[in-house]
Amino acid sequence: MKVSGIVLFIFILTGFSGPRCEATVYNSNGSAASVQTLHNGAHNGDTITVPAGTFTWANRVSITKAITLQGAGVGSTIIKDNVQGTQLILWTLAAGLPSRITGIEFQNGGRGNQINAPAGIFHVDGSNTNGSTFRFDHCKWNNLKGPTVFDTVIGVIDHNTFVTDAFSPVIYIYCTHWNGQDNGDGSWAAPTNFGSSQFLFIEDNISGQGAITDAYAGARFVVRHNQLNDGDIQNHGTESTGRTRGSRAEEIYNNTFTGTNLNKFIGGSRSGVVLMHNNNVSGYWDGLTVLTLDNYRTHASFVPWGGADGVNPWDMNEPNAFFTGTAAANSSGTTVTVSGANWTTNQWLGYVLRRTSNACNSNSINFGEILGNTSNTITYTDAAYVPSMTFCAGDSLEIRKVKQVLDGSGRALGTLLSGNPPPRPPSWNDQVTEPCYSWNNTSETHHVNFAAGASLTVRRNEHYFNDTPMPGYTPYTYPHPLTKSLPPSQPTVSAAPASQSYLNKRNERKAKKIKRRKWGRAKENSGNETVEPLTPNY
Image (tube, rainbow, N blue to C red):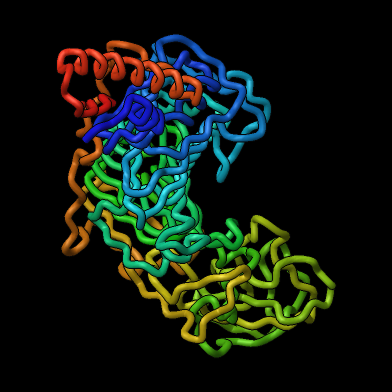
């Protein structure tokens, strides 16, 4: 085949080079602008390095490609956060590919106000259905004025140090878009699948005082093999989060909790299912150490779900009132005297007291979970978020019972919800009890287990089992398979920024080189009319 020099030159300048076989390592100068420019010219699978040194970033870096962002190591590469009003790094994971950040220490560099979740300072958006994964490893999060946020991310956070004096929790987990839905609805409707890869794994990290996690929107996460110093593990329920659902599932195991006698809590869960096993605990209030399970809607009302008041159809309730009557006098604090009552002490413990009239035009909540009763008085919960229920003499009241709370602790599944506010499906409430299990968690003198929090709707041997392994459960592979990837090799020559002008010059140089080689071969084969073009060496 005869190919003219002009045709060959055009062929090369088009940039056609066949399949791209090798990833490229680009060396940034450490600035946010340099990293952003290199990212814009990079391809999936490439690496961008940040050199040793201290760099203050005042602009957000947005990453949408499956790259590795690699520093020279904690204490060597330091990025200081001086971004105002938005994230330091916003990362959207590429479908079907792994992404990674490694070897960087993050410090506050002058950010004004705190930036809370769901925005966060370091924010990653992923998917549980498109094959994307993420690894955050060998970094240090050193007293920044806000958290890291991972939304619907499958992957691992490993071998990091989190210094939490300035802000905690430091890791927020969401599964907002699980199975392509919104608000965590997809996660709540899907099976739990404990022991699978379909979680965000937090392993082999060191964390300081305060919570290492908070979780929302159907979050699914695993906390294992970490050193937690005066730390605890927390989540939110379907309540104060508004339309967003609560945390869905978590595993907590093989961690070392080391306290300095500050409190008794190694954590608290406000919705969903928790497995807690083989943790070693010391330095907390020995003999009292617990992880609490709670349902907040039994003592407060939240939009759009309302409160668990015994008649709310988002919950499962006994159909009829157990008692109706009137207040004999104005309530005192959270205790009311009831006319004509003659009860057994504490016979209404865990039921709900509702005020069904409002003689005083009170702006207080109209229900509370019953904490105890005498023969003619009832003491009920403080609402905490709003004024607690009050009574005037003559107010009518009734006693109801909540059987199961929407998205409660030890509950799972249910018909898929959607919309805001969500219309209630005809089949609701069809959630099921899926108990929490705790076993082999050791402290100085006792086993550490679950305890019900402020709500008596969380019941032992129904919603949770202590000193009882979960039947049929096997933990996921440890270490996480993503941690077995080796650090990217260091380049021998710095790669230039992949700007368009750079690409044009590169193509021009290669075209001239190939053209010279072609002319040389043509001279050696004078008289031969056919000269085969050389394959571009990209």
